[in-house]
Each structure stands twice: as C-alpha cells, then as structure tokens.
Image 1 (cartoon, each protein chain N blue to C red):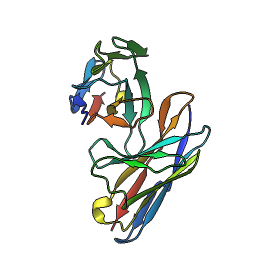
Image 2 (cartoon, one colour):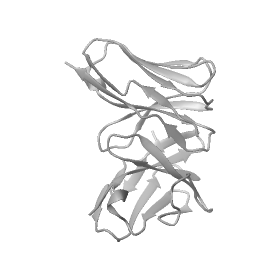
Image 3 (cartoon, chains in turn orange, purple):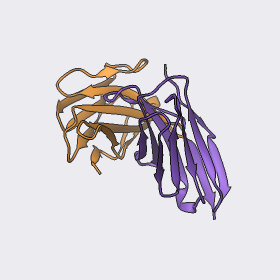
Length: 115
Length: 111
C-alpha cells in the first residue's frame, strides 16, 4: 500500500517555542493532505485540510494563526505549532489522499510534548 | 456537525468468542472506513464501504454498511489475542473531505 511518513516521530520542546512537523507521501502525489490531533485515550479529531498551492481550511475551533499549514508541493505538507503550550501536547497525525486510488493513507504520527 | 457514535467503547472477551462493534450516525456518509490503531502509531485502514447494504469480508472480519449509509458494523468471528487493539470507524462527507472519526472501541482478547 501507499506510504506516508512523518518527521519527527516525537519531539519535546519548551513552552513558547515553535515546532514544525512534516508529512510526506512517498510513492504518490497528494493534492490534499489532512492534519488530525489525538489526545490520550481519545479518537482522532480533524484539525485542517491542506491543499497544494492554496490556503488550508481549518475546522471550527482550530486557530489558524497557531497551527500554520504549508502545502508547497504534491508530496509535502508541514504543520507548525507556534508558541506551543503544554495544552498543545498531543499526538499529531497526517493523512494524504491518493487521488488515483480515492483513498486516504495515514502517517505514523508525531508525539509532541510541551514542557 | 456530523457525529459517529461507536459502541461499545471497551470490550474484553475470551479467545474464540465472537463480537460486533457498531458505528451509528444520524447523517449520511458517502463512504465509511474502519481502521485499527496500535498505541503510538497511525491508524491502518482495514476496509472502505461505499454502497448501502454492502458487506465486505476480510478473513474473520465482516464489515457491513447500512442500507441508508448512516451506520456500519464490524463483526469478528473466533477472536484471537492478535485482534487486540483500538478499532475506529470514520466517515467521509465527500471523496476529498477529511474524516469524522468515532470514539473508537478498545478491544482486548484474552487467551
């Protein structure tokens, strides 16, 4: 099946710093990628839709100025958590839509811990 | 807001027993997916159902999409310890849309 990678797999940072997470589709082109957040013992919640070459669309309640998304190429989307705080600690998971297969493939996730 | 109610949230049974997990919504989805997620990893797709009334089988797992495309079920026959994990249902509003996930079912199969 298609492969989606995320980098880093885990990160620990101090409160107030910014953290960038990369999501790559390794063997297909993804015009659309999605970012999800998963808190412990909870399910995935869609944060935003990342569209190649255009602005991301955010779900209700997600601050676009805090979670910056850039989808500069057909294989890469980045999520930057700006001025991170402990409440931003979570498991961030991306998915990439393979348009040819009309299927979303998920990355392995990035564990963010803000101290 | 489209919600997916998944039940049960927790289930612990003995090896060899059968079980069914339900995923219900008041809204219609264009498709519904079932995923399995291991701790610290991303969800892995098990199946996608698209047509109302559709039934798909994956070895001991049987997936069904309701006629009205509002609900789905996952049935596992003769459960094994290797089936232990978090099972998630997710619905798509359209092909290019993000997924709405249910809360998940934590399944434990005891040997």
